[in-house]
Length: 151
Ligand SMILES: [Cu+2]
Image (cartoon, rainbow, N blue to C red; front, side, top):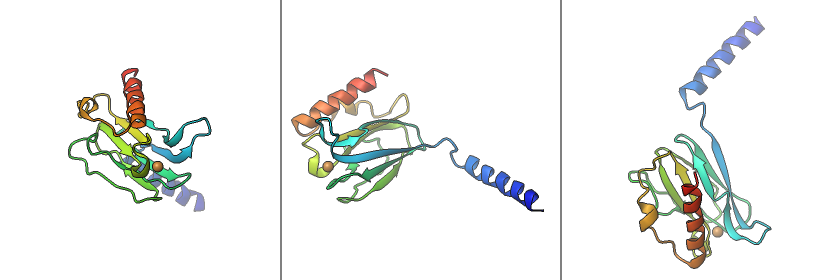
């Protein structure tokens, strides 16, 4: 009896996970003061290739940091978000696109990240129009664009 019940439970569990996206992945991004290799104030990783349905979790490895949308680099029709200072926050990628993320206190110090979902992100034009604030952010943004072009 027990073994039979066990099999039924396992089958219905599988059905549940297939009904959702069985292939959805969780990307974990650390918010750091330093990577120990000379880079200061960063998301790690800061360039994330994701699929629609994936989640991206911003965890607080050091503080103070936050994660929030860069509205000038964000797919149309997707609500922006704003994590509080020292708040861990998870976002779900619901549409293809390029998603810019910044830490408000360290934005001008280069603390930005970019999530790319889909092969033909509909807001690709924003890569040309968005101008990050600060020399360091501009430098990292150029690195993201180079990484994207290399794929
Ligand atoms: Cu920060």
